[in-house]
Image (cartoon, rainbow, N blue to C red; front, side):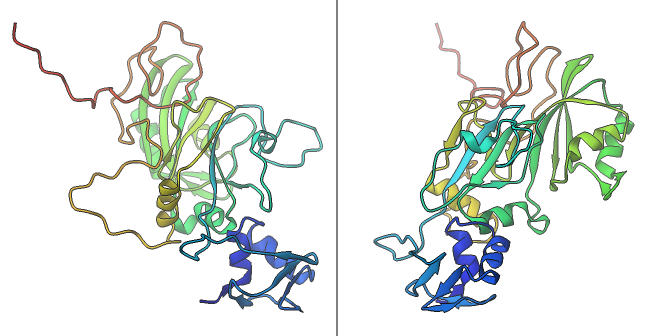
Length: 312
């Protein structure tokens, strides 16, 4: 079945749809010996040339369908920028990623230089665009450390909405995760990705964010085993779940009584109880209080089944 040229090339990891359209306008792409045009549809057997070099779509040998895009999870440390070019020469997240042949990594959204945590990369421009587009309402969850404590009225204000430069912004969910003094943690969820939005929402009620860590993007969770600066390739079934969440492939028929699991396990996605003072978000209480929080609680926490005491 014919597909739009810019959609197929974006799905192959050559860039975003907008970038591919710019290539077409510049005359860099030819199809079957003629310059490509905007909106052109092709079939996978058509001859495509990019910058006078032949391009072949990689197919699965058995199914004849395009391969699944590659999706990479990265635990971004603070101090790295999400950009390939920086006049100031600051460290870039792209320098930490595995090298690709015939494709490039596309960042799914951004995290500012002072923020860390879950960052997704993919070789599919179409998937990246859908995951970032507001119409798909993809949730982003953050662990936020603030200087001070929100009152009940302030928490209500944050879910009702505050006025920012671009309009009204709000959290879809906010939960107190405990702490003391300037080391108080909250988990927040929102479906937008404007620049420094989480920080600016807290500033609107007079609180300064001192640490911000993304722990979830859609149905992808930041697993504890992926430490700061490390990457993890999603498994094929995890990539399929991500594609289904944005309508790129049809959902599979589910067997009855099968419990759905998160794309990347390692944390209960349901909101937990507020933590006790000194307890890090997502983990047991510790004596030291200066460690970074990069994940939620491990398996075997309050949701683990209790063992029955054996009779003596």
